Every structure is written in structure tokens, then in C-alpha cells.
Image 1 (tube, one colour):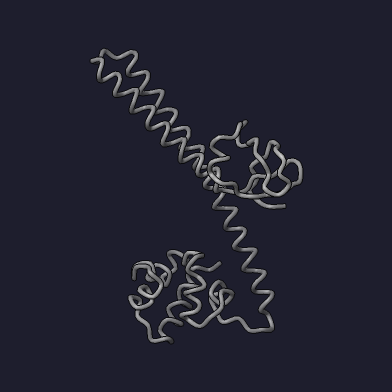
Image 2 (image 1 turned 180 degrees about the vertical axis):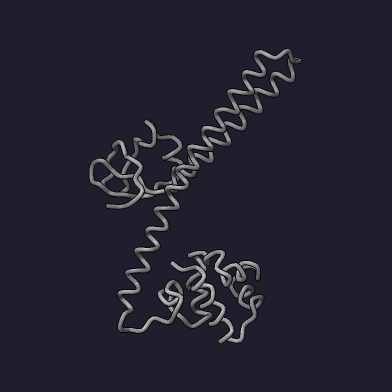
Length: 203
């Protein structure tokens, strides 16, 4: 999707409705800075705001994502193109998140290791040793929490029994047995437990 084109389209339709950035922002419950970022192509409106934004600008979501008013002749073609582009962007974002998970996990583990080594081999007061170890474990726990949240949200888990792909709640991901990114969980569709692999896209 062309963010710059979409931004210019939002600005044009806003002006057609005689709305300032501040007025549009107030009606959507966002800041005028957020509207400015949309219109300059620096970001896209959140999916939760798109229907409200389109209602205020008197356009469709398909128009918004196309950056122009779509004629009925090529409406379905544009809708399909926008959907495919949105899916491709989600897959790319999920891949980036899973890479970030590895980075955060590695840094958290190295920090814990460093704090334990310092506490073990450097001549320090007892309270300082305890503080360093505690700092290491707290940082590691926070890092693992972020990693688990990323793993839950990015991509899907695929049931080995029925092939259903879904995004589980956080609790099953946290407490399930796991090997790498595969987790032993109950499928919400077939109701059976299996080792479910992390996948980026639904087949």
C-alpha cells in the first residue's frame, strides 16, 4: 500500500468535509499529531479507527486503502489487491516481531549471565551480589514475558490434528509445554491437544 498516496487522499477528503486536523482528531479520539502522521504518509490509521474515519470522510475502507475513490467497475479487483497487500504486510511485520523475540531473548539471557558472573567472581559486598543477581533475574523475567507476548501475537499456531490456524490467548502459550516455538495446546476447533507449530501464514 502506498502510504503517501493514502495520506494525501485523507487530507483531501478531510478538507472536502471542511474539517481541520484537530476537529477530525477530536471526533476519532486521537491527537492531531496522529492525523498529521497519516496525512504525511508516516503511518496508517489503526484498523480499529478505519470504519469511523471512513464514515467521517464519506468513503469506503476500500477507497481509503486504495488512496482514491474506487469505481464500481474495478471495485472487487481493488478490494482483492488491498487484502493481499494487507496480508503481505502482516506477514512481514510478524517476521520482524519473531526476529525481535530472538534478539530480546538473547540480550536478556546475556544480561542475566553477566550479572551472575559479576556476582560470583568480583569481590563485592554480599548485599551488592544479591542485588546484581536479583537485577539479572528480574530483567530476564521481563524479557521472557515480552518474548512470550510476541510469540503469542505474531503469526498463528497450527493444530497438528485438524490443521486449524489460530491466535491463542496468552495463558495457554505461557503454561503449555513447548519445544522451541511449538507448544502442546488444545485446539479451539477440534478440541484435541497436539504439538502445534508456529506458522506465519494460514494455508
